[in-house]
Length: 373
Ligand code: BGC
Image (cartoon, rainbow, N blue to C red):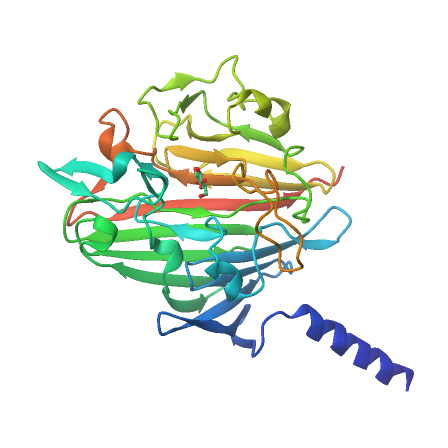
């Protein structure tokens, strides 16, 4: 009898925790649940689980990572991302929570650029500028999804961005593969091909809060970035073109420093591109963020030349978590691997132009670990 009561309680707890109905295992380590409908397409939520019990939830709506559930140093599990339990949370829409970003991550000044002597006008959605792909960027489309589970769970998302979409030239076929590795890494591999020359700069927009509680600030997290230089911006957050040393400035994270230590001397907070120290485009460790209270640590590896560190400055409490708590300023931070913002208008920045016949390829890994001391 007692055993039956335990089983009933366990079943109730399990049902209450599971936010997705109809969740089915589709491959070892991958569950799929119907999450809703958008643009007359089915939207699903996939849960990838690795052998260590780490879970990542990803939707084919926007390629959005809604949750990354990991333990703290005492074994207590929590979601280290800002995100929502239901698709309706993403319809508001939140500022790119967990989403794939494209065709161009970050800003293009005035939404304009010249390519092969022709001027292009992109959609403007951030004052007079173009941000994160425009009005309906890759974060707001339904991607085609395929699951793979050879040895580790993986989700392959594909989207064809049509010639002229948001003002961009060329049909662009984009594939993004998310893999949860046995080393607790979320690996993101981007591939793209075009039939006309076009700017491409793909990234991913997770907002991390390593405390696992979005009511805590991230200002006590420590950050290290392997970058001696950054790209200063104007009042519209467009790089001025200068590549400036971080030395003796609040942008110097070459030794791990608390985010809150100098943020007050950065107007508006951190929202800048760091020029990573690197000799080639191999996959390299470029940044790490830690929370000493939970013991959680996240390392960033990338093949990209830049990193946008955004300290959640525009979060203002108007969005609420699924449990109804306000999402306040500096309660999430983004570490977006990328080419530099506004590169199509800055000849001194590495080129972001993809030509027909070329293959765009970029890899980023976020590695979770615990510091148990
Ligand atoms: C940008 C911010 C922007 C945020 C969310 C970041 O990548 O740099 O300026 O507010 O995304 O939209």
